Length: 113
Image (cartoon, rainbow, N blue to C red; front, top):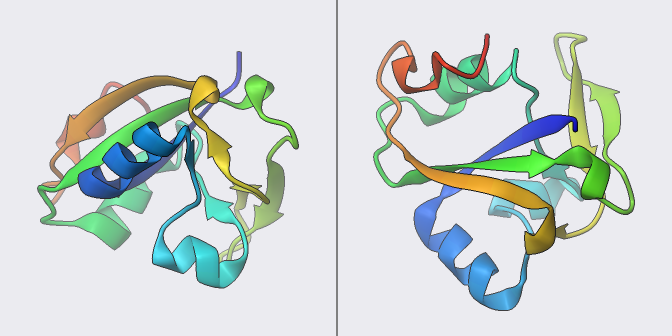
């Protein structure tokens, strides 16, 4: 099982659970794909884009359950990040947990990065 991670607003995720799929954040929809991180990237992603937020969840996804599969594409810095071109089906999610992001994203220390 390959795990990838999505940080999203808890209210958006609650709507996705009710709908059976997550169509992405406003940024995801604008970019045309859902942004994910792998275990080594999620902590830095949290620090850069979500510092100080308390209204979040961390969604853990089994990437092997995705069809189409995620595409690994370079970010501005050149690192490859998983992107999903389509909605995230709830059946691919293996865990959802509340997430508060402090300055060092210590809540993610058990994941990686």
